[in-house]
Image (cartoon, rainbow, N blue to C red; front, side):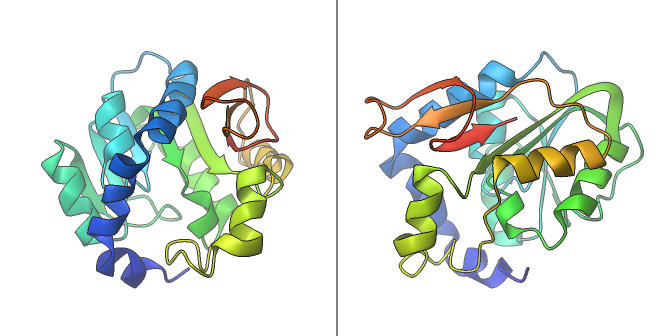
Length: 202
């Protein structure tokens, strides 16, 4: 999916979102932390401006947009320009992988997950955070939010069951899921086991 120009032209706006919505960012971060193992060498696929990678101690990040990577590099991330479907790393290079709100922009989720499986060490862990299309947030973006949001205008949201199928087809075993609840679900922002409300991490 050719979204890179949107992110190149709006890198500052994208990065500023995390400051304007710090409560939601920290809730999402807490959900991801709950699923993140101790690791030696981590990679965030679709690292963007590096907010999550920097907060989680992930030192490597890949993204197709150099303007986003410049901000990630300023946060101490070792950045690489590239695509999730064709990762420029050797087999079993990392013991932890993260994708955060990336799969809705991929051309081929199955291929991206197969590449993730290839570069992940045998006992490594892959954490996927995404907007479930059937969640409150997913429905909001699909029904009325995409037109006013340049980042999600061309996004293709998928359901948790679809993501699970993609993961299993790529050779992963799904061990746990968590969801970040929006204020209308149960204020304030918080995360609980399961999925179906706002954002699911697998």
